Length: 519
Image 1: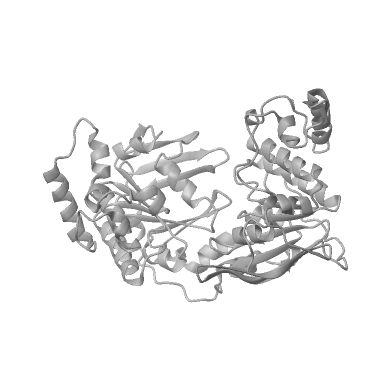
Image 2: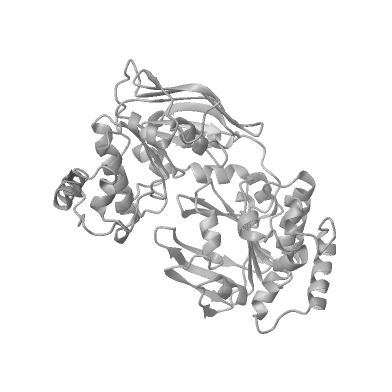
């Protein structure tokens, strides 16, 4: 089953279903939204796009009253509304369904559908009547399931449809769907899209927030793009080329000069036949499509793509944070099981996550304690590092990476972002890894630390370490990568090497037309 092409636009009404004008919101002096205008028509599926930090989530919260807006108006069919909570927004006719469905998995499907409005008689819930109504309601969504069963027994796709059915039954005229397809497979996406088209055909307006460009072109009528809290533009989907959409989202022209790339010759860059780390058909259903990836000593492989393309998900699979359900890993020709980070560490893998403050550092511990964590994990609880060993390791890497201040007993949470990132690098370098995975290693750090991290990446490569580096800064990634794997919609779509490793080629790969999704 393939996704249907974009539907013809519905006729423009005198009064749009939803009109947001001049919406602004500031946090601690920082403008998260600056005068945003968005129009949603009756019977329209409208995509809201933007990279990380663009303001999409803030926009949804401000429109639905989850946070108070500083300026701007919201009108529903010509009448101004000012909801002070998501519940008031729902009462006005605006329902939001998030990626993480906010229903109760321990209750039955019927109980979730009618929670707070159950049919009653003499103070008792009429269970049979509630189930009858629930079954009838879900039939309108082509959903034939046991409504008496706990919601948690069903797939994420079914849970999304139940949440949508509940919202529609509560008289919602506008549906805001925030990343509803993030955890769905192709068949489940098609089911959801069929429901969305049906609802739009009944006159509902749907605001669709997603990172999946193929889905945007398959389902939406118009697109609004935000960037850094500002409105970039609003365009009809059928008239917006993919490359133009990429330019709007990233804020760069394709004609910009590409960065110099110190590529190796083919013989030098080719991985050794038996001495490589090989991921073959590696993937996880609903998470990342199966991929092949070969890594050689001294090689830097970059992962490029828009936010939500599957870069971080790939990194988590490579390090065993998520267990693959297909494919295999071989190291130096031998098959290896990778079911957890412990397995990855045992094989000499290291991983610096994007969210260093929540997934990397332990803020309350000292710089020394953070640096020796991975070494201690590899040795095991029965072989603790002595204090002398800890001090030696910490001081060696503080000096090597120029971590400031050079105080191993300082709580790491008090260091700058760049020095925290260096301490994370030190943690894994202390294990003498053969593969290091870096997810956005230069995000949120100052210019000086940024240059130092880039220098370290290049130095590590010359010392024989295999590196997988994720970065949103395309000019940066082409400056040190031997190969670049481009991702879109959680699958690999291109592998660039040699002279093809440049910003233009990466953008062209991201924007290239893709075949329709198949069930």
